[in-house]
Amino acid sequence: MSAAGGLPLAVDRAALHGCETLQLFTRATSQWRARSLTEAEVLAFRTRMAETGIGPGVSHASYLINLATANTALRARSLAAFAEEVDRAEWLGLLGVVLHPGAYTDGTEERGLRLIADAVRTVLAPRSAGRTMVLLEGTAGQGTTIGHRFEHLDQIIRRLGGSPRVGVCLDTCHLFAAGFDLSSQRGYRRTIADFDRVVGLERLKVIHLNDSVRECGSRVDRHAHIGKGTIGLDAFGRILRDRRLSGLPMVLETPKADLGRPNRAELDPHDQMNLAVLRGLARPRRISRAVSRRRPRPRT
Image (cartoon, rainbow, N blue to C red):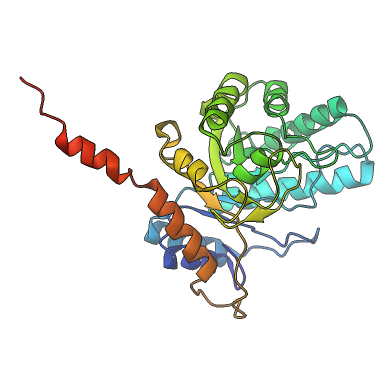
């Protein structure tokens, strides 16, 4: 949800749409410099989260941050911005900060993995009393980005000694673009099994639900409305009804409508459409309920 007009309005927008969880940017995504959060705004945000019962909430880190870079100036800026993201999420009482691991544009994959782990360690070490997690997001695999293989995420976590402050966010569009065929039942089962084997399902803390404009394995990160892309509705039904994923916050990052009034909480017809589709898919299938009603009661 947009935080235009102040962070508490993001909660109001989520509540208006009947959401149970929330993701937001706590700062501008295209600028290094961020406006300061006032004590009053933080208190109002936390109060609205408590009043609405929405939670857990997560923030998404700025897209400018690149913890895999070996460029000295960019790395320094990225570290400072990342530290600020963690602090802001902590103040707001959020579960964690969703972070794109970065791209090794001027180095190697191995060095990029080491630099990411070093950066996370550097930021979390002086904040050992905090509770906010770093949630590494799997990527689509474009260019030299890190995170499109489960082994990447596992190596970063291992380099951090298996820290409980580090979790994973999986994005359905990114997975599909990276070559994980969520559109078939066999492909979905294999994807979840591979993630559990390599990283562990206990590390999965957030899921982004997005359809994909491009085909499986395209390595192109372009989100589409649910059921309007190449992944298809069946895949989202499998995710929503998978008991192993029950209780996980699941967040839409699908295209928004241009409402034109950024300082008000208003219903977004695109969000309404996507949420309605997902809520319908989350319900047990009618045929299953019918079969259940006809099943004879056990003898006791």
